[in-house]
Image 1 (cartoon, rainbow, N blue to C red):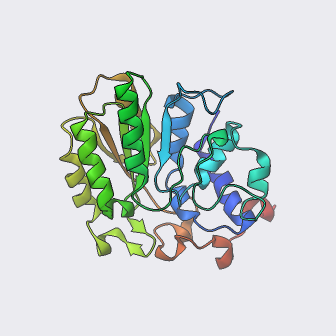
Image 2 (image 1 turned 135 degrees about the vertical axis):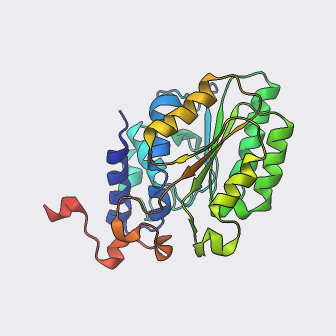
Image 3 (image 1 turned 180 degrees about the horizontal axis):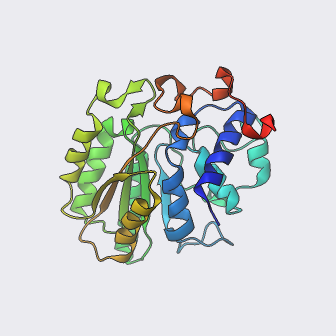
Amino acid sequence: MLNSQDIRQKTIELSCKTGAGHLAPSLSTVEILTVLFEKYLNFNKNNAKDETRDRFVLSKGHGAYAYYIILNELEFLPDWELEKFNTDEATIMGCLTENPEYMIEASTGSLGHGLPLAIGMAQSFKIQNKPNKVICMIGDGEMQEGSNFEALMLAYRFKLDNLLVIIDANDLQAMGRVEDVALPNDRLSKVLSSFIDENYFDIDGHDEEEIAKCFDSFYNKQNENFSIMFARTIKGKGIDFIEHSEKHHYRCPTLDGYVLKAEDE
């Protein structure tokens, strides 16, 4: 059984034991991914490439560590990949690389690529009358890419009721705060809500009950069009001094003297 506290701790350990950066953008995703994979996403534990599975596309591929931990907990990603992570021997990277054997659906990290891919997957399932769902998680800074808005227009046009778009709205991007570069998240949320007439959710992205209500509506109701979860999250959640920190997008907290709790004992 997946547990968000356990996933968060193991995500922190993966970064700190290997010296890998990109921890902070991974920590804002923990509760959403835990609820999704534990209770909703359809997949076959014995076959990562089962054609009946739902597709999850992590467009913000630079925040993949919690995703790696969950794939390892589900036994898709082998232990040795985590043990060798951030070395030349590992095949998984700081950003996602497609690997069907591990149920990693797409290579992402180059911003604005994941949602267009997810649109293609969802439209393909619709054309074939297949019940598969597609869930795509995007960073709020990534929403400055025009390709995402082109993709949203297509999602509306094609009435992709099998698609859920999740915005990880943690207020920060690689080089600063989103409000200092483009739209602040309150305004971005209003813009995105104009794309659909129902199934738009602006929630606390760390509240598992609120997250579950969104997934319930997407999975269990008859929807007219695609759905959006605008999840307000905290970048770096779980380590006080990197929460809301602009400099820790890629900085491993061990560089600032952080020591894992297990190493203190």
